[in-house]
Amino acid sequence: MNEGKKTSDHQDQSVPPNRWMALWEVLIVAGKLGLTSFGGPTAHLGYFHNEYIRKRKWMDEQSYADLVGLCQFLPGPASSQVGIGIGVMRAGLLGGIMAWIGFTLPSVLALILFAFVLKGYDVGSAGWISGLKIVAVVIVAHAILGMAQKLTPDKGRITIAVLVAATALLWTGPYIQIILIVLAGLIGWRMYRNLPAIPTTKLNVPIHRGLAVICLILFAALLGILPILRQTTNMEWVALFDSMYRAGSMVFGGGHVVLPLLEQELVPHGFVSKDDFLAGYGATQAVPGPLFTFASYLGAVSMGGVGAIVATIAIFLPAFLLIIGALPFWNAIRSNPHMQGALAGINAAVVGLLLAALYQPLWTTAVLSPVDFAMVSVLFVLLNFWKCPPWVIVSLGIIGGIIAN
Image 1 (cartoon, rainbow, N blue to C red):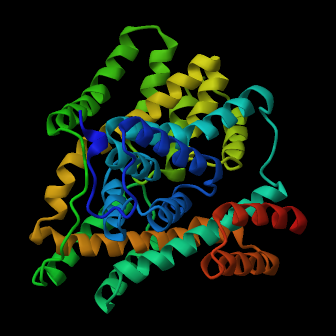
Image 2 (spheres, rainbow, N blue to C red; image 1 turned 60 degrees about the vertical axis):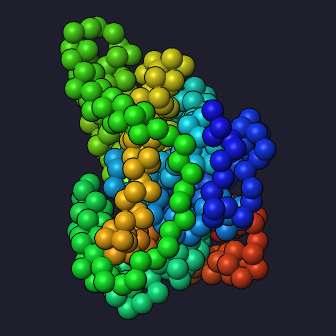
């Protein structure tokens, strides 16, 4: 295989000279993000943009925005899928796995520890968590500013972004994101279909289409087979796997939408009590990384270490199958002149969705006083104008939150 030797035209930094170095590089960078990416999926996109795009230039702005738009279409944790996609394009299929492990493992281990040691401990009102929420507001605002400058350069796309943001805030529901993205794509195709084609950088997607088709078939097959296995066997881990896989398959954009789905799947069936479920939810807000690792806590509470492993794999497996299945067809779609107008509308919609998320739930839950607003303002200036690294912003946010509370 020569995956490690391929390079993408858009990369400013060359791929490491051999495949194993590339895999190690992906694991280390993703692990750093897994340790520092607080604030939920919308904030994660900001951290990814800063680390992968601005700092390391592993992908250009347009390609990153298109990847975010693709992952918004797919069920599952959008931020994790974006990370997996970047890992695949950097270092092949194993690169995607390394990106997922690096980004996910820190919060998995932390939440298993919560399950075994801190179960029932109320951390919801801790000052340092308030500080992390403020950091999330700053990171997302910074990402929106950078993406808007590139992706909404005219009044048409600005209008699409604002209308998407307003609609997302006024009309909530599990499918609203995909509906808005589809509508924005249709509007973009109508408005920009006659513009000259914009050159696109051909992305390195070292995945064969045959493997992609197999992944898509396996995704659908498991949705049908797992409930049958659950009914025909008395194995508790099969029932847990089925519940987690179904929850991971039904969420668009990831984030907090998975929480009610998990509660419906687990609490009535006796896997965890409601008190343990709510305690784990509070703990999940205190750790970096994807919110889907809440499943690791729930699995550990219900079945110990084995349950944690089963639940973690099951809830992320749909996301992995879908992003691997979609990526090999992405270049053909995004480079088609007839699709570039639609992608212009979709990219504007992504900015609008991030803008809506900046207000709800981030701003409404984090900025509750003049002190909070002052912290947001200071940290934003430090990040956007003084170019302080994210770990400094996170540290200052934690200290400020403790002092303020």
